[in-house]
Image (cartoon, rainbow, N blue to C red; front, side, top):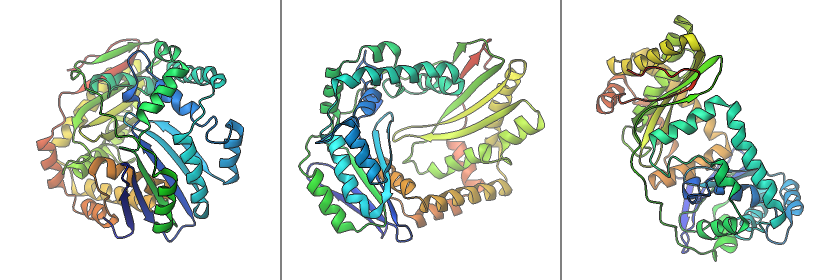
Length: 410
C-alpha cells in the first residue's frame, strides 16, 4: 500500500480507502455500490438508472428540496451514475466539510424515501435518455457493440429498454435498493486534505451498523458472435471496430494501453495521421482501451461520408493489424510523455484520485502507487509492446455500423 494511502475493511464488509493530499484544501468522496445495470432484472432493463434518479429525492429526515439544499449549503459538487457493475455516488467539497457530506451520503444510501409521486418523473427522464440515442449515433453504436462484445448481462446498457423502463414500479425500485445496496462489495474512497483516524471514526459511526452480504454476481450468458448494422438514413456512416484485449489486472495492461495510444494518442498518432490527414477519409477517428476486471477490449470509432465509409473501415482494420509489424522509438517516447502527463494531472485532482483508489481496489485488490505507475510507463519500449501484440494480436474484429448501407467486413 502506498505510504500516504490507508485502508480498512469493516466487519460488515465495507471497504474504506483514503489518500491524504497535503497540497489541496478540498476533498472528494466516492462510493462504489455493487448495484450496476448488470443486475437489472429481465423485463426491467433500466431499473438501476431509475433508482439512481430517485434515490436523492429525499432521504433520512429531509425531503427532496431539503436534501438538495443541504448538499448546496456545503458547496458539494456531486453526481450519481450507473455503470455495468456499480452505481457511483461522488461528491467534492472543502476538506472541512467531509464529515457533514458523509452524513448526507449515508442518508441517501441507507434511508432513501423513494416518494411515489416522483416515480413518473424519473421514468420520463429515463425514457427521454433512451429516445435521445436516436440523435447520438456514436452512443447508439456503442450500445450495439456491447451486445456483440460481452455476454449478457455484461452487455446491458444503463439506459435499459423502453419496455423495461415503462414496466418499472415503485415496488421494483424499493426491492432493487434492498437487494443491491449492501455493505459487502461497497467501496468508499476519499482523497484530499483529510486525517485518517477522524475519517475512520466518522465512517464507522455512520455506516458501521449498515449490514448485508455482497449479492452473488449474475450468471453470464453465452459469448456473443457476429457483426451488426443499424439501418438509418444519414449523410455519414458511423462505424466501430473492436477486438479483445487484456483485463485491468493483466501484466500486459500498460503495454495494451501504450499500443492504443500509438493509434490514438494525439494528433501525431497513427489513426489521425493515416486516416484523416493523409487520406482525408473522415474528420473524427479514435481508438480507446476498455479494460474490465476479467476481460478487455480495444474499440475504434470513425464517422465518414457514405461513399468513403468502406475505405475508412478497411483502413482502420489495416492500421490495427499494422501495429504488430512494429512500433518506433519516437512513438513510444510520445506515448510515455502523454501517459506521464495524464498521471501527473490526476495527482492534482481529488476526484480523479478518489476514483482511482476505488478502481484499483475493485480490479486489483490493492492500490497502485505513483512510483509504480510511473516506473511501468518509463519501462515501456518498442520490444515490450511488440511482445504484447504477439501474445494478443489484433484479430477477430467485431464491427458495427450505422448508416444507410451495410459495409463489407473482410
